[in-house]
Amino acid sequence: MLKLSSKNTWSELLEENKALSARVTELEQVEASLLETEERYALAMKGANEGLWDWDPVSKELFLSSRLLTTIGMGKDTLKTTSHEWLNWVHADDCEKYQRVLSQHLKGKTEFFHCEYRVRTCAGGYIWVLAHGLALRNAEGIAYRMVGSIGDITQRKNYESKLLHQANYDYLTGLPNRVLAMERLSSSLEYARTHETSVAVLFVDLDNFKKINDTLGHDIGDHHLKEISLRLHYCIGETGVIARLGGDEFLVILPNASEKEAIERVCSRLLDVTSQPVTISGYEFFTSASIGIALYPDDSSDPTELLRHADAAMYQTKGAGRDGYCYFTPEIGELAVKKLTMESHLRHALEREQLSLNYQSIVDVKSGEIIGAEALLRWQCPEYGQVSPDQFIPLAEESGLIVMFGDWVLEKACQQAAYWQEKTGKPFHIAVNVAFPQFRDGHLVRKVKQVLQDTKLDAASLELELTERLLMEDEQGCGEALSELRSMGVKISIDDFGTGYSALTYLKRFPVNTLKIDRSFVSDINITPESPALISAIIMMAHALGIDVVGEGVETQSQQRFLREQGCDYVQGYYFSKPLAAEAFDELLLCKEEWLLS
Image (cartoon, rainbow, N blue to C red; front, side, top):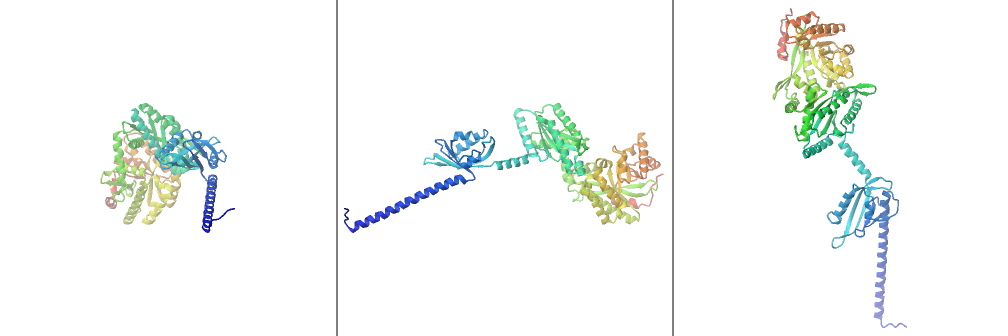
């Protein structure tokens, strides 16, 4: 029988019992908390979007979650394996990077483990994964455990790859673009420096391609470009690199180009494949190419400068007649610099009031009276002085300034013609040269309507001069605009007729009012027997079609007499007057004396 000694003893026992009960309750709570934590961890392992892994760096034992296994197509709940076995799943090209990044983290050189690599799936393919991890370390800083996650980033990598391709390859042709081309040129030059070899840089530009785009639309132009790019790629093959720089410009890089004969054979092949017709929707289209060549190390060791030199040589080829190739020389470089500088000045010529118009009289052969004038654009540049139109007009066309200049000439010439018409009380005929870019998107028609309305000049007093080459190369693009202009009453003139592009079918097809016989025929009247016969034939043909004829470049009395005898309607040239500024022409026009043509 238990004997209790005193009341104090009972109190102590009660207090100890209470403490023991509290301790049991605390242990039960800790146990429940641990169980809940394990359940949460297991739930996290099952529900995580990324697969989880747990690795022992000492035993190499690796635990993979079900999500990770599902990602690679194994379909198991969990898997215990080793890190050595896992390496068999890593792409061979990524193993070295994977192990290097892992080793750096284990050694404490990085705060976290972070690595993108490819993992083989059970289906046999590969997916891209992003692995995150963190090593747990003991007091000495040695990793004894490492945990982390792996997520499938294949979609992101594919998107990045697509963006990278778009950044480095031309969307239309699939060829390397300018960015990648310059990288490869730099690599080729570095290799050439190391191995003491040569590199040839070819700048290839299609001739007259812009006409296809402007006339038939960009869909046809794109089709043509794709076909040409395939031919160029096939032509170059493994001998070099070909890239599209933009528009109709291509770059060819030829490494180990020590022999000019080999370079020129490549150029000949390129010219041959670009000159072959391209068939689109049953129609044949023709282009040619102009090629400029720059050499490393002869011309430069800088990739950008080599490209610029090749570009300059290409323009030299175009100036020499196109459809050929040309090597860069220091003289070409000087011309290119001058051209670039001149273009810079030309861009400011209009705003700085450096442009002006001269007027050359057009004389009626029978009456000897001045019935009008041709407006001729002039440029007085502070840097270069009076620049020849043969220099700055092509430059304005290449730089896109010709439309702005053409609009200005049309406005000023019509204003002046309206003034002279009002001052003399007689009709005054003004001839204005127009270029192909002015026809685009109906611009010229709209501009002519606006100018005639603003100046109150009668439409029949305005004559627009086009070269016959423009008509030959762009029948569809100009035809509709010319018909609309003709229906307004504006006259259409073909300038420099007879210079190698003449075709009777075009004279019948287009609404032409006037032919201007090229000055080269007129100057040869007393030199070659062919010129008089050709002039007579042109005049007879034009009159048979109801077209007036102007003889250009008349400098002697015998030339004007011959043209009058052949029935030429109008004449123009230094024999009557050189091109004059408006004030000087004003005096000439108001002179009471008539021209003595006898």
